[in-house]
Length: 180
Image (tube, rainbow, N blue to C red; front, side, top):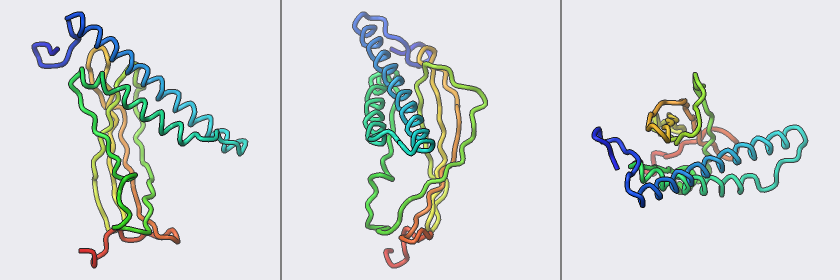
C-alpha cells in the first residue's frame, strides 16, 4: 500500500479498496462530528453570553463527540501508516505533587495565513517549551494533511501558558524543595 517513494497510497486489491473507502467515509464522518461540536460550542457560548442560556450538557456532548471523532479517524490513520498521540496529562495528572494547584491556560495563537481546505486530516503536535517553578509553556502546531494527495502543511501554531494557582488565585509552586 505504499508507492515507490514509500508514501502510503490507495490499495489496489478489492478488499483493500473497500476498506480504504470505508475508512475514508468514517474519517469524513469524524470531520462532520468535529464540525457539529464547533457549532454546538459556538451556539452555547453565544447563548451563555447574549441570553444567559447555554446549551445544557454542552461540555459532556463535546467530550463524547471528541471521543467519537478520534475513533472515527483511527482506521484512516492506520491505513495511511500514520500515528496518533493523545496526551491526557493535564486531565489525568495526580493531585499529590500540587494538591491546591489548578492549571490555568492562556493561549497565544498565530493565525493561519490561508484557510485549510476540506477534506483534511489534522495532526496536533505539542512540545513542552519551558518549565518554571509554578508555570509551564507548551508550543502547539496544527498540521493538515490532504486525504487525497497526502500533502502536509502547517496550518497554525500557538503557545499555551499554564500557571498553577493556590486557593486564593495566586501562583504557587508545583514542586517544592522538600518533595525532592
